[in-house]
Length: 174
Image 1 (tube, one colour):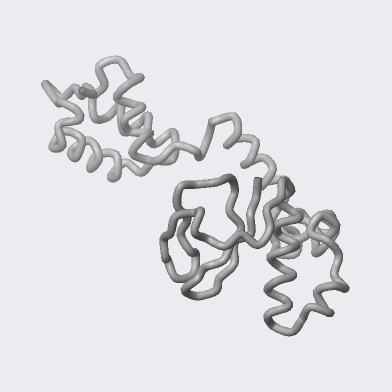
Image 2 (cartoon, helix red, strand yellow):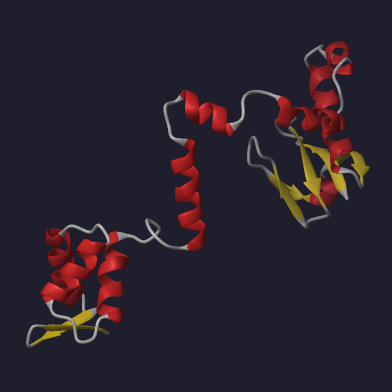
């Protein structure tokens, strides 16, 4: 159930789903018991509630006749896909290689390449390498695009923070 309700303080109109105990005005922040709010329309269809609210707002601004000439929300929603240019055309016009974008999206969805932070790469090295020393962790991280200096600093920070230990030149996550 959707209801178009109004605020007694600032005259704002909004749509509320269901029947909550209280509702808060999105404009002025006044909170009241829902049953004390004025319900202008109650309907099962969200689009109908949108139409009523929009019509009321247009009428307040003496634009009721102009609003009456517009299509319904459902009809306008179907126009959105046809409006403007598609993503591929936009990217190409911006000088971006769309094939490379698609490949990056595929890598992200598969969870490989580029989706891991540099810090996560360092901790992953400590987790996967067998009794890793600094050189092994640096090599592991460098293969994945993490600078050696960053890796060394991160190892020091992990030890200082108590998230890893270093003993005899070997690191271990705690």
